[in-house]
Every structure is written in structure tokens, then in C-alpha cells.
Image 1 (cartoon, rainbow, N blue to C red):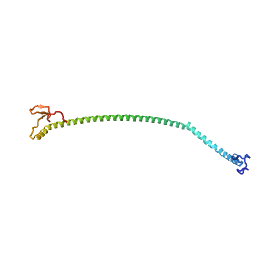
Image 2 (cartoon, helix red, strand yellow; image 1 turned 60 degrees about the vertical axis):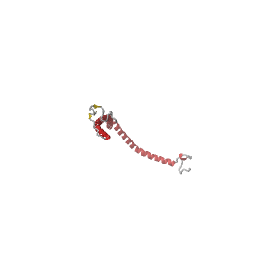
Image 3 (cartoon, helix red, strand yellow; image 1 turned 135 degrees about the vertical axis):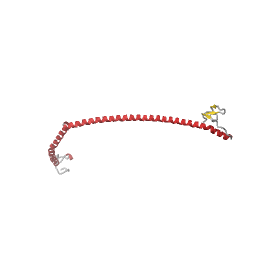
Image 4 (cartoon, one colour; image 1 turned 180 degrees about the vertical axis):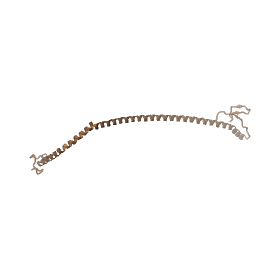
Amino acid sequence: MSGYGFGMLLIPMELGPLNPQVEHLALAAALFVVVHLAVGRFLPRVNRVLEERATILEGVTGGPTAELWHAAERVRGERDVLLSEARREAARVRQAAREEGAALIAESREEGLRERAELLATGQARVEAERAEAEAELRGCVSEVASELASRIVGEPIPVPAVNAGRFEGPDGGTGSAPPDGGSTGSGR
């Protein structure tokens, strides 16, 4: 006997695990028959379930369910088309609003610059007018102040020369073009 077990070998040579024992073969054959009978009994049920599934699938792909399915697909396609059109329209509206906003900003900027220029021009004119008014007022006072200062320096009273519309009246009563500050023309600043 062999060292592998108590049973008889199928082939009377030692081939190791490739030479099964007869008892193992008999047990495997008995188990195969049991499994074959069980599968043979349940296989028709499995086949029946598979056939029912196939008919249900045929109903979905070719019956009234298929019509509903195709109608749903059509509606889904129409929805997708409407959504894409709505997205394009929204993009157009956004672009138009962007352009309109940019135009309004540019217009407001131009208007602001124009108003600023007007304010600057008005302010400049007002400053010039106030400067001219202050200068005219000071010209009237210059001869008095000059006479008073000259009187203090000399020590005796000096008469204030008369000023006629910004022109100096000389001692002879004639008008000259000399300013009341002592004969210098120009602004001396």
C-alpha cells in the first residue's frame, strides 16, 4: 500500500496526488449526482424567471411602456433644447446689460468730467473776479496808505492824491497813466 492513506489507488503506481483513491472518486461521483439532480430541479425555475424577464424587457422596448419611454425621451429632448435656448438668451441679455452698463459708465464719466471742467471754469472765473475786486479795492487804499507812510517818514502831513477810475491825478489836475503807488507801471510782484 501507499503512504497516502488506507484506500486502494486507481492506478497501481505511485503518482502522488495525480493518482486519486477509489473511495474519493466514489464520493465525488455521488456528490456530483446530488448536485446535478438539485440543479436539474431548480434550473427550469431559473429558466422560467429568465423567460419572464425577457418578456418584461420586450414589453418595455416594444409595448406601451416603450411608447411612454419614447415620449419621455422626446420630452427630455425638447426640454434640453428649451434649456439651451434659454441659456443662450440669458447670455445675450447678460452681454447686452454689460454693454449697456459700460456705456452708462462711460457716459457718466464724460458727464462728470464735463461738470468738473465747468466747475473749474466757474471757480476760476469767480476767483479772477474776486481777485480783480480785491485788487480794485486795494488800489483805492494804496494811495491813502502810501500817503500816511510817507507822512510818518517825512514827519509832515502829505495830502492824499485823488484817484479817478484807477488813473492817477497829478498835481496839475491832469490824469496820467501812472498808478497811485508812485509811478511804476506793471504789477511789481
